[in-house]
Length: 129
Image 1 (cartoon, rainbow, N blue to C red):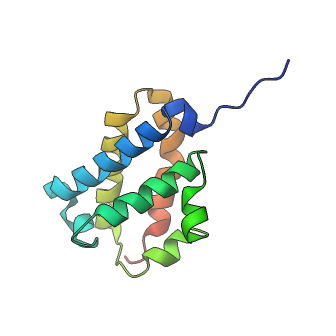
Image 2: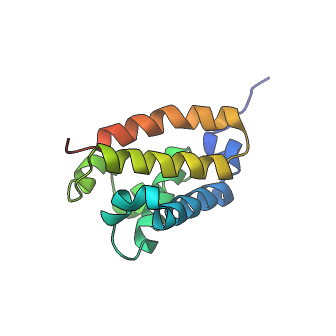
Image 3: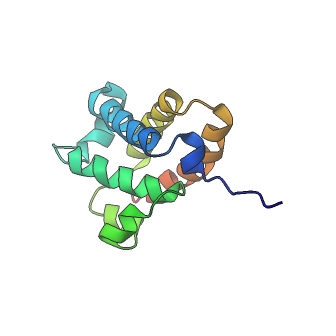
């Protein structure tokens, strides 16, 4: 008997959950005073950033590789080098992502599985002290 592998993308609820997660993330970043520095390094209109993040997370979590098909390899650190990301911007991003994840992904164990590599990625994106 063969067992079928379930991706994180499928386990959290697929497209609807990834879309809700990215929408909530950007809504929090756009509205919370605690995220003001992180918000400031983004463009005034967040729609394109939100769409790119949705595409990236979809593939990252095991869903369709939308980002790669549209834009090629993510090269995240290189693409973000235009923004000065220090410890405060990084921590504000982490705060918004964790909160958005807690509000949109029901199962705490799935959030835990997603959290460690996301936090590591956030630290990797920091490009100033």
